[in-house]
Amino acid sequence: MKIKAISLVSGGLDSTLATKVVLEQGVDVIAANFVSPFCRCDKGRSHARSAGGPKEGEGGCRHEAKFVSEQLGIPLKIVNVTKDFLEVLKSPKHGYGSHINPCIDCRILMLKKARQLMDELGAKFLITGEVLGQRPMSQRRDAMHIIEREAGVKGLVLRPLSAQLLEPTLAETEGWVDRQKLLNICGRSRKPQMKLAEDYHIKDYPCPAGGCLLTDPAFSLRIKDLIDHDELTMEDIQLLNHGRYFRLSGKTKLVVGKNQHENEGLESLVAPGDYLFYPAHDDAGASGLGRGDFSRDDMVRLAAGITARYFDAARNSGEVAVSIKRGPEVQTLTVTPLPDEETKKYLI
Ligand code: SF4
Image (cartoon, rainbow, N blue to C red; front, side):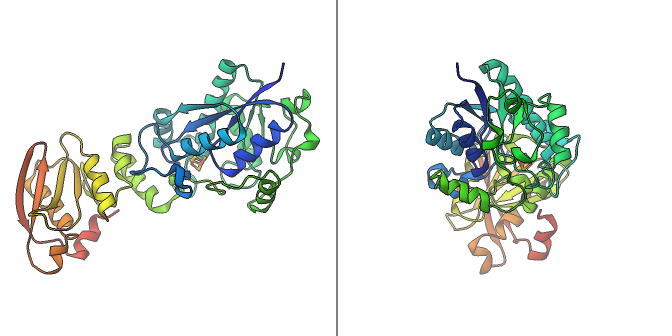
């Protein structure tokens, strides 16, 4: 009977190559994709593009992982780790990377989940596309040791792309894979992976350098704002990809669309209790979604004034009419659009 292994397939090039290297050695590989709400791998390939940013349980990588597993002809198991991931993100034991990326804790979580899958699927070892020295936080030798120890997978993780530079793992010592046929790639250069992709005739890969929104400086600031205000929920995270994000008070935020696509995205995300601000009388301009405490009239007026700043009519007249919808009720308020300098004070 063939030896079974689970490969953590993100949908990026490295995990695709790592899987292929082991498949070439006759191992029965099952792809596992741990859905992070912050993956943005789908930005590079048309078949996977989805409107509206992350939704609960839907990372762009999920589509990429499906594509990759189909290309490699192996089964795919998708595991939604959103709930656990958000807990990790709020307070990671090993801290954040250069932005709000909790890479070490994130890897520990993924490998813990993979370890559980091993038992479920009768797999003997795990495969990852990690490359020694490629990422400063989680792909250092010492970090890899910590991650394996804390995830309870010591010796079980084969990293085929860098294996010859690392201690032999169980898969190698047991002879399930031939160490000589594994690779010795290290560092940040992508050239060896590009060459390998060419050798394997892998052409259509979306994000050779991977993609996680938590390493994006602007997105990180918004996530940090949600964490600081104890509002890190999928419902609020979904708002962050829809335009300009304003913190109006400790309990109140506003997101204003930058274009028609974002305006429609925001309108689709309105939840009970939310306020939707948009141009009255069918005028052209942005939509704004207000969420939180609008019990004070001046907060409603502030949100209307900021949203109105992005109405076409704001260029020509001193005052503009804003429709404000909450549930079935719509009222119209005439406001002076907030000046740029004032608006910036609330922008994150
Ligand atoms: S960049 Fe870091 S936080 Fe984001 S998915 Fe990769 S390991 Fe996890």
